[in-house]
Image (cartoon, rainbow, N blue to C red; front, side, top):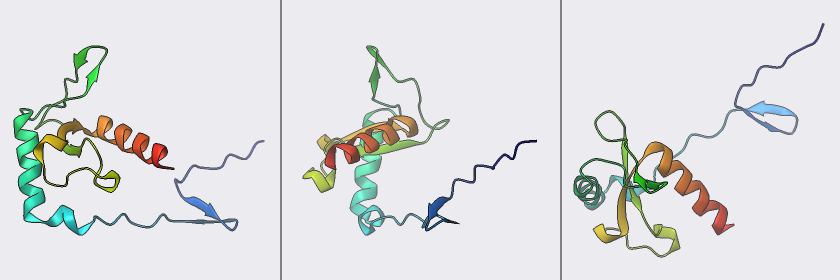
Amino acid sequence: MSLRIAKTGLKVIGGRRVAALPKEALPLYHAPEYRVWRETVIARAGGRCEEIVDGKRCWKAAPRHRMFADHKVEVRDGGALFDPENGRCLCGAHHTAKTAKARAERR
């Protein structure tokens, strides 16, 4: 008989499993200027993800899919905060991949 351990998604710290801390949004994401910028970026894209994969634009679009207004050059990397030219509309999968890549490059 083998013992299987369930995957809980909890991190191991000091030999004990602990829950990850909740993510807190930066105050700028609650600013009225950010909301206007976000709406402008998503509306300009027609509510559809702007990522190009194998020469084709991603098919995911609102309202069926959640859309994110993404900074092309992230703010912490010197990108303009509320400039619509520094924004593009991405679906959740492409936004997550782009953010993870930017974080890895920053390290």
